Length: 266
Figure 1: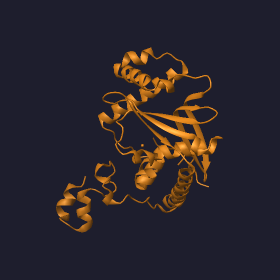
Figure 2: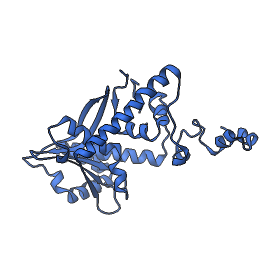
Figure 3: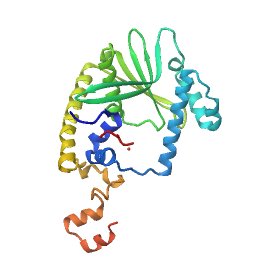
Figure 4: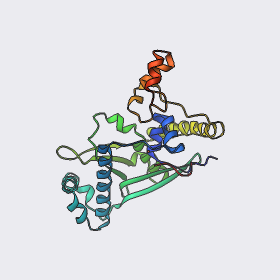
């Protein structure tokens, strides 16, 4: 049994994309620096989610709206675009920031739905996104947030996969907010279960090798092109300078030039 308690969609995305970066952030507990623009975007997104939660609970939201006119604009635009979602109906159960967990291979898979609506026939997951809608629908469908959120609800509720859907609302658009709804079925459910089993079986192997032998997690393939923009590129020797050193090119000049919220129970 491993000591890792919780895994969220963020950890799964990172573990699948680059296991070494997962190691640096959650095992080595190294911090990945954020630009000012990134930090401002995260702060605004957190405030919007707080606004939507307080609105759903019937709590005062005036102070939040007064602090940021953009919040009020985005909220009003979303209410106009999705009145049926944001207006309570007597026959529908609803909850904001709804949390669910699922024990899977000794890991506690954890999801938090921005808004969950459910009635006798179906369940709908809603997620508020504060970035522009991606042009590639498959990119969102294959993201672990979509896959994990749908999978966990199907596993922890009486709803069949075909009775569940997930809708992303992109609220900070240049004009009106836009949405993208992804349906679910049993084939997707089985594929997600297979992929989770494969990924977590790898993690079961990598963790003891890291702890007991000091063996680092695998790196993403260089040809994927993800390393140049990664804050750990130097540490991973994935900069152009380190590549020259590895191949013996111009090593004298290269030598002269060489300069993610941890999980506490990892």
